[in-house]
Image (cartoon, rainbow, N blue to C red):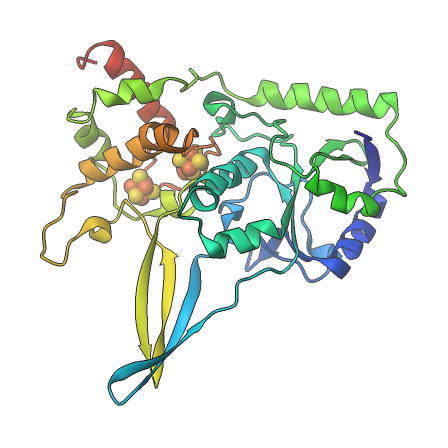
Amino acid sequence: MTVRMLEAARLNAFVAALLEAYRLIAPVRRDGELRFDRVAEPGEVVWGYRNTPRAPKVALFPQTERMMRFAQGRGRLNAVEDVPLDETPTVVLGMRPCDVQGVALFDRVFGQGELRDPYYCARRGNTLLVAMACDLPRPTCFCHAVGGGPYDARGADVWLRVVDGGYLVAVQSARGAALEAYMQDLPVADEAQLAAADAVERAARERLRAMVPVAGIEALLEGLFDSPLWAEIAEKCLACGTCTYQCPGCHCFNIEDRVLAGGGERVRAWDSCMYPGFTLHASGYNPRPDQAARWRQRTMHKFAYLPRNVGLYGCVGCGRCIQSCPVQLDIRQVLQRVQREAESGGHA
Ligand code: SF4
Ligand code: SF4
C-alpha cells in the first residue's frame, strides 16, 4: 500500500478531478449547518470538521425515496411503473470511521441474505468511501467502546489521515483502486510525514474518554426484558425521535402509498421506534404501549438483536444521539446502567 501526500494546496484540484467522474457527497455548509450533501464546487468541501450533527447515511439511504409510481383510471389501478434504481457512480468523501461502520451495518441489513434491498444495493454497489481518520473526537464519542476507533480504517476504500500541511492518502480496498489514477501524481509520503500522522493518531486516541467496553452486553440484556430499568430510563424521554434520525445505525422505515392526480406513488421514509405510532396496529392495539417499551426496544435492537442476527452492534459510538437529545438522555449511561443492573442481579 503506497501512502502519498495530498497537500492542502492540491485539495481543490483533487476534488475537481473527482467531480468530473463522480457524484461527490462530502461535508458542506447548507443553511448554516454542516452536513453531508452533494458537492457542486471543490471549494464547498469542509475539511478538518468535527463529526456532522446528522449521519451521512443519507448518501446511501435517503430520508424519503420513491419506490414506484402507479396510474389509475376508472377507479382501478391500471399501470405500475418502477422507478429506475440509482446507479450513479458516487464518492462519499470525508466519512469518519464510526460512520463507515454504520455503512458496514447497513450492508449486512440491506445487502445480504434473501431479502436484499435493491434500492440500497444499487447505490452501494456504485459508491466508494473515501474515509477520513478522526483526529478530533468529541467528548461524546465512544467508538472505542463498541469495537471501533478513530483510526479504524475497516470498510474504507481510500483512507485519509491528517498531517501538517494536508493529508496522507492511501488506497485501502480493491474497489478503492479505481481512484488510484487520482493520486498517482502525488508524492510518496516520507518518514517524517508518516511519523507525524502517527503522533496525531496517538493524540486522537488520548482524547477519548475511558469507558467500559460493551462487548458481551447482549448476554446481560437477555435477563433484563422485564426490568423496571426501562421505565426509569424512559421517564423523561419526549418521544421526539431525534436520536434515531441522527443515528448512522438506525435504518427503520415506513412505506406508504400517496394518492396523486391520476395515480399515485409508493414512498418509503425513515421511521423511528421512539414514536408511539411506530408499532400501532390499525385495531388500536399497540404492542409497545409506552416509552419504556420503546426505549427497551431501541436498546435491545442495537445491543442484543442485531449482534445476534447480523453479527454487529447497531451503535457505532458516534455520540450524535447524546449531543442532540433535548432532555440529555445519554446512551452511554444507559449501557453502564445495564452493566451494573446485570451485575447486581437486578438490584442496582
Ligand atoms: S445510538 Fe447514538 S451513539 Fe450509537 S450510533 Fe446511534 S447516534 Fe451514534
Ligand atoms: S432524542 Fe431524547 S427525547 Fe428524543 S426520542 Fe431520543 S431519547 Fe427521547
